[in-house]
Amino acid sequence: MALKGTKNIALSYQSMIGDQVAVYMTAQIPESGRSNSNKTIQDLDLYEANKAECREDMAAFDEMLFELEDQQTAAEETPEESEKNQEMEGIQ
Image 1 (cartoon, rainbow, N blue to C red):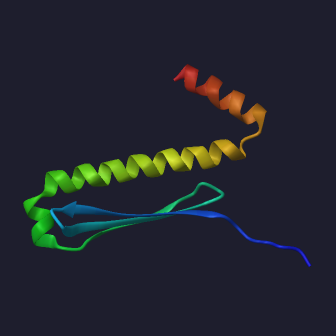
Image 2: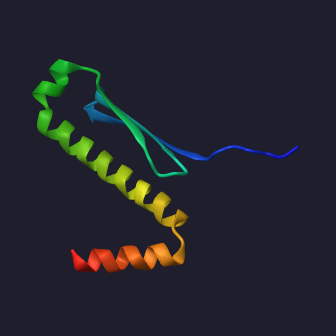
């Protein structure tokens, strides 16, 4: 018998206005680095009245998610793939 499974990173954040939740944000990042994320507006009136702040929180969440995705995929790259990707980034 062998232990078999996968490891996921789970994120669960909220955009808070005062002590109220305006937006829920969640994400799952499997070892493959291909994430699945959701944003749910919990309180539409609160969101509409504070749209700029909520969008800042959502952008911060996305940035965190992208960094974690990049870490996951970088960990999976072989040294040759990593070198090739760095060379390609220098070309752009």
